[in-house]
Length: 158
Image (tube, rainbow, N blue to C red; front, side, top):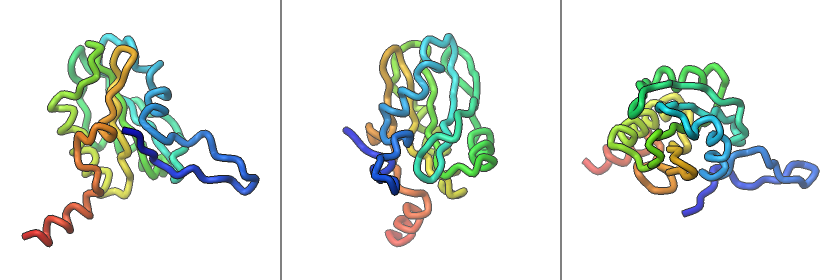
């Protein structure tokens, strides 16, 4: 299932901005060298500007073999300080299997809700395995509707 974070837009000279991250594969390519073959879980965030051009990569947490401690404050503070409009989370599974754990799914949902409140878009959570990856957005693992909209929708339903 392919998707795009940004529409391909031409610059004034007609060239397409090529440095924007447009999908999960491009995000995976950005982080795989830093996350593959680590012997413990490592989480990073790719901070993005308004056109999804990376502003930088922030090390969020270095954990143990099968877990990493991650709090919304540590993920979002660098995004705020960098004036990032969006971010992509990425972490590895040292086992090589990129399938998300229950904790991975819950963390992603919590971080997405926290980011939405601050006006920062969490665009994806990539899990890096051995030569492969899992995209939470591509898989539809969680509801990617902005938190404020989902709150409004739920209040109308009651």
